[in-house]
Image (cartoon, rainbow, N blue to C red; front, side):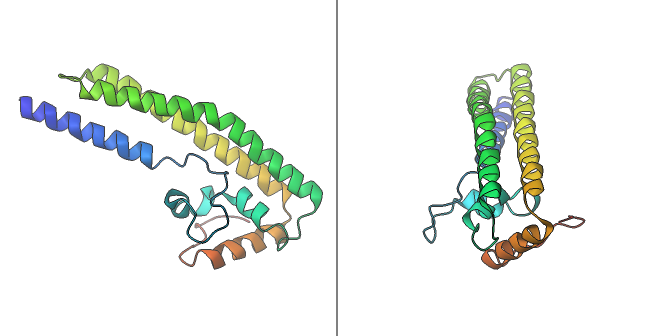
Length: 169
């Protein structure tokens, strides 16, 4: 019985560490410094609907022919997202650390672990909504032609990219 408890605690700890590591923490932050190979691996995998489209559009503002108002509006959206998401990200890190502590106890307090897991998922949900909200606000700034051109630029930079099924421009 003791071996099963240790195994379950270790498995839960591993899952919580994996989920924290895979969190797209700064969806609209700069993907890299502009140098080859500087992009964070996690951001390279985040393609499709939740890709950091606003930062990509700002990096390609000349190619997209963004006017100064569009640039200012996109920067404002990105800044607002960062300001709103930073405290939630900090809460999520704290919650994940607390979960790790709970799971390392012998025996692990599964009731407390469940509460921490639910709390972490609620925070992830809030981050995902903020990201979706920022994306929608960013889409409204670009013309249909600019959105299509942005997708083409992104696809050229990321050869494995495929437009998600049912995605409108």
